[in-house]
Image 1 (spheres, rainbow, N blue to C red):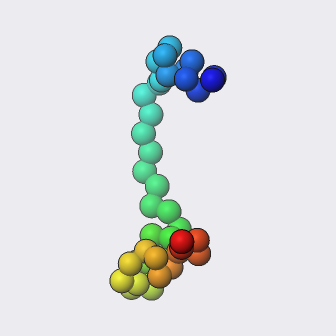
Image 2: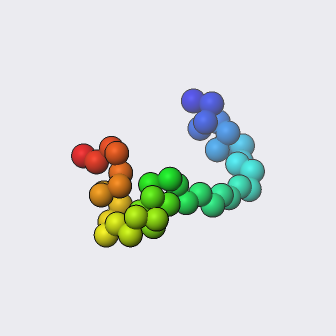
Length: 42
């Protein structure tokens, strides 16, 4: 409920850039897809 109340009042401007460790490992190991380096694949 507090989150919904905050949205009604107005959220502050925010942005972010995050590559994530799984994507970094994918690039470093030249993996074909992210599933091959992700520890939590379904």
